[in-house]
Length: 98
Image 1 (cartoon, rainbow, N blue to C red):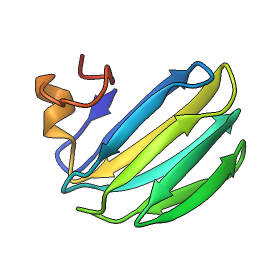
Image 2 (cartoon, helix red, strand yellow):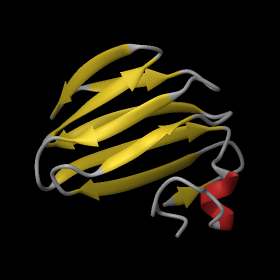
Image 3 (cartoon, one colour):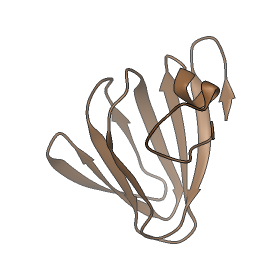
């Protein structure tokens, strides 16, 4: 994880079946899947995002991620920066701030 004054970028590697449960945050999120694939639920819609594809999740919108393959690599950029990752206080994952 790297944070500046205006944003945070993190790289996460997931095993098949790993789940980031439904949550929301005040940060706009840009996700790019570099390897593998994920199923993402946003506002009642489900999306399959494969390697080389990405999506944007608006701020304060509930969403959920599930890795569909071992070794799934997800690069996430957030703006404003993820203070909960920086402080290690996010409550839903073992993300980069943990």
